[in-house]
Image 1 (cartoon, rainbow, N blue to C red):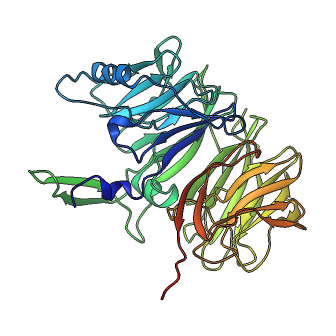
Image 2: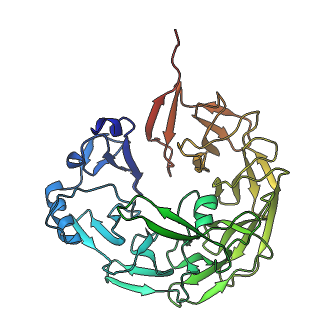
Image 3: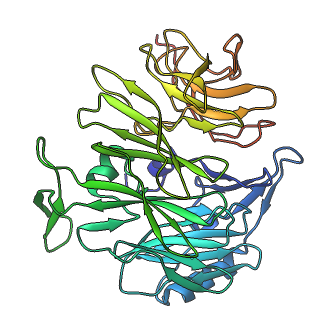
Length: 424
């Protein structure tokens, strides 16, 4: 009952694709003291290479966190830089950096405040994070941090989200800002929750129970007011985006040209979802692309992918979740998938809303997972952009999880559970 065996039953490899199309891995089935960071090139040898000197890094971790009375081991990082040079860690509300090339584990922040929502810039040269509800940027080369927002309070949040957005909009993820691909700007949420009702509850877990106060909008009461800002790192000047009336600001994503970003908003009843394109330079010149409507409710999706002259979008407009291709002005080009079945993420959690695994624009093929076989199976399929051809790639009576890849010469399958058994 108290051994590690029960916890290891569902353990699998942790994995992350790196820009050179190699995989970083950690075998979570092994005891903590035996886990290490591995690298594998699936297109060549497929051999696992150990990247880290475990004994040295274990000592570096103890030194970085200021501990001498315990044993600590390298865990899987919260993220890697795009080149795979660095790994990012959060420990006891501070930020740490693993330098894989130089075999070093460094402490980035050392404050009494909580640092959170830390992530790498797309070029891997900076780390962004939130402290006391303001956004900071840390330069890895110069080892200097820069504060870029200055209005954070207990009820005014920059770059981090309120409880209701964390729970209901972003699926228990603190997603309050988005880097531009050129690593020179951020789009971020500013949240005013001063008029959201307070809830009080007791945390009975500690030896001495603690009273917790949390902003929690009850049905019919006021939600937090959320607006979108665009900030250039060099000037730190904020441009506020004018989107008209909305209740929820539920998704933001940059377009590949770095000159525009997409924004999704919803009404309070969640029966209408608007997709906008916004000009980066001004925060204005807002163009509504289209509106999704449903008499019941519109499901938020992360299946939005920008191509050279078009984009892919998941919609339930025909009663099932399917993929559509649109031009940048919102005109329908083709319905990529169709039928009385739905696209569904291969992830195991209900809030994972991403079913597309890869889009190969050159061959005009899209790879995705769906429930076409049955509601308890997730299989990998490939369809042409025009929707005329569909091919099932996986051939297992199992639940399989796939990772999103940039190239489709191979796909890493890292989770599999048998789901069909013959009953006697």
